[in-house]
Length: 538
Ligand SMILES: Nc1ncnc2c1ncn2[C@@H]1O[C@H](COP(=O)(O)OP(=O)(O)OP(=O)(O)O)[C@@H](O)[C@H]1O
Ligand SMILES: [Mg+2]
Image (cartoon, rainbow, N blue to C red; front, side):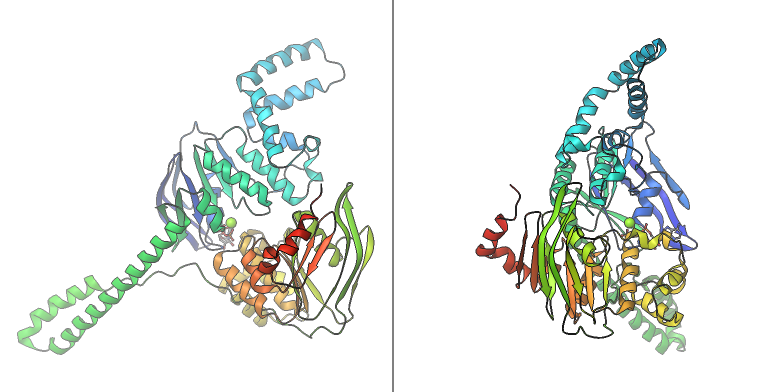
């Protein structure tokens, strides 16, 4: 069990939450929800003692093993995949690593022999043999064949690392599991695997997510962080949505009724306070007014950014020609003979079972990767801008936000930049925040400001809705619909693809399909489904 006792957190005077009292009980899976920047990740850091609260206490039984999905994808680069998973159980890992080191020695001394005997006993006591097999089983269920177990973490791409870190968090059946947006960058199969894991998990889990479908599937409770408070509801996301809408409606009605009553009483006081015979009544009504006067309805942190991508100049005649490009990594084919030409008004959904293939295509178009063969030719009038899936390299230099954005402006006009950041919900002193402290959604909004500045006439997006709250997704969807020029979009958000795109290009290691059609028609056409079946590797 975790108890939050009068817990408050603020950063330089900015209150994220205050006087929070809540209990998290074993057997439940809590979905921690709230707007981008509300303080969810910070709260999880307080729960796992990575961050100190401003005041109040977190009470956790000291004999419970708490496990956190690590966000730092590079922290384990020096270790093998299997070792990284086993590190999830630090006590077991100590024994495991020392034992492994001795076994790897070319000649073992007598002392080593004795030590290894002791370690074997300890390993068995900690159920190490079963757990090692369990780690391997988990990795293979997450799509890693045996050859990957000894790979170094540095050899994996982002999506693969996330899967290993997930296995690490879950390894050895922890008593408390804290997951911060675990489905971001996970492929569809791994999301299903995680859903099943959480459904069967009997202990305490707290999961941050913006994915309604996922929350509905796995959560027994919803903990909503808003109005600087945390409120826990029984039920999944849909129950929370209905309950909170009803509560808000009642609050507004109550507010209105109280306001009307106060007005009525104030009228009476105004009319009769000078009247001696009624002055007693007027005084008692004054007291009633103070009692009834409603507190202002607190402001929600759920707000819509205003996103719109203008263009400096429209695309000329020739936009983009892609000729027979192929690309492989370590003998694994990602793209095979991809060719297409972009036309005016094209808004293209890039599909494919393998997220590496899709990302490689946009990386090649943007010049970040060079294809093994084939050519990419952009038209002379084209200026493109790219939102890569992993945009962490944009945030390496820890500048204040305003200065960070200034790097991408032709001429720095702080007033204009502040206006732009304001529309992205960074107001007042927020623009002086160092970019390292920005939340996941805030970083994505900063990237959108950068792209709004560039006024490019071709926009490439790889999973732009990862990290975004519902309000930001809805604003982005609107901006995509209104954008007058060319877009190529990779997204797991099918509604976004269906409402924006008029062309679909699907890539696989076997080949490609290119159809001028909506996403829904693409998915439901029998003829296209037959073609798609041929794209699967046999
Ligand atoms: N060390 C810090 N100093 C100042 N501000 C900070 C610091 N750490 C976080 N913040 C700010 O606190 C707020 C909450 O951040 P947090 O990462 O907890 O949000 P979140 O709810 O997880 O959002 P998201 O859904 O985007 O991940 C953000 O506005 C962030 O910029
Ligand atoms: Mg967060």
